[in-house]
Image (cartoon, rainbow over the protein chains, first blue to last red):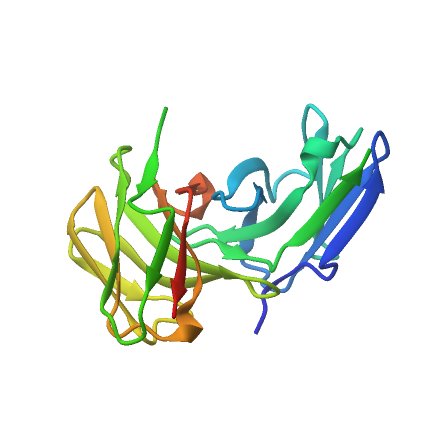
Length: 112
Length: 113
């Protein structure tokens, strides 16, 4: 039972354009969501997060949007840069939970 | 700068060997985790620990065990390595619940031949 789903295994965009990565979840107890970025042969690094009391959080070129009624979140990267090419993992947590539940990841390729 | 350190970046072991993967964190975090990453399968939780000497099974514990004798160190043990355990292994630590997020190590690429 996959509680966090990233339905697009890969995404390719041109440098300077917008990248939109999507994530759906099924567990209504999730109230905190995070995005991690992973380069090959490295560990994932934290990118941005959002609490369920918000619908948007912005940090520089990165914005995460949360639609609680649809149980959907998205990560927008504007403008995309070649250095953004990586695997992006969506993760979710419940209030009294030690664990993060991860999606399977989306490989983003930004072409120069 | 906070750190999670995994002892080996690359490891090659033979089928049937007992393998130890070590992870050390310097952040005084309560919780530590072991994941494996495989193409198309994402990050899968093997075991986690929320206190010294405490451990809980994750989603795929079969063939693995763990040890946490000190707060800063969490070891993953492959009792008898098999080729289907060839993978990228990632250790992470967290201050508290999932809301704190994780800090990951750089990973160990294990190949079992």
